[in-house]
Amino acid sequence: MTYEVYGAATNRSFRVVWLLEEMGLEFAHHQINPRSPEALAVNPSGKVPVLKVDGVTITDSAAIMTYLADKHGQFTYPAGTLERAKQDALMHQVLDELDGVLWTAARHGFILPEEHRVREVKPSLAWEFTRNAKRIADKIKGPFLMGEKMTIPDFLLVHCLNWAVSAKFEHGSDKLDAYASSIRAREGFKATRERAKS
Figure 1 (cartoon, rainbow, N blue to C red):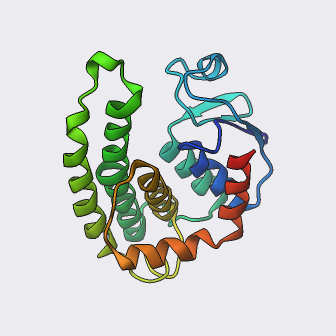
Figure 2: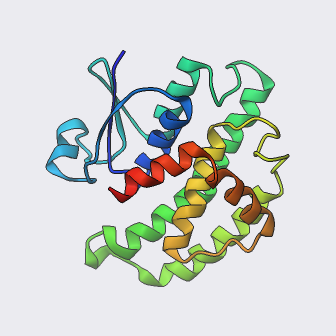
Figure 3: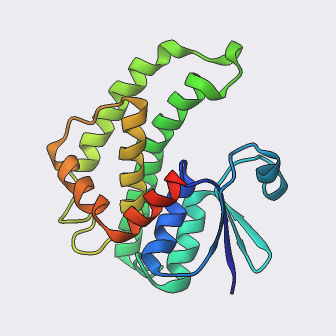
């Protein structure tokens, strides 16, 4: 089986590359930018990341990560268990309440055509991010969101906390700071960060 990841490790592609690094799996990494001709060639929307598995294309970072975790039995609980239901609920909470807010801010900051940007929305989004981040912080059960086991929501949450730094969104939680610092010390995270620099 051959894995190919399309997307520079400076956007949501970071999550997929980081997961593969943590799993210790071999993969080819094509550092391409969103909406570039190379991105459009593998995904008509031009969005990254894209994962190619033996010629089959999978899009969306959460979908890719869920596939990889299920396929290799790592960083996930088995489908059909109550733990998996809780894991999926956390994943969707992070995507809806943090990722979605950050993405809306990015769209109105520099992605949408100038005439469709509403820059005045950013303070409202920053307030919403802080409120939502504190709610998620309250759910941390141990070193990881679900306790002693690192799962997909941890990858998503730490990536969103990193993204928030560049967006200048504050979360205001010492608990989140300690949690994220611990996870950023992992070798898989550090290896992915080095890829982002290249």
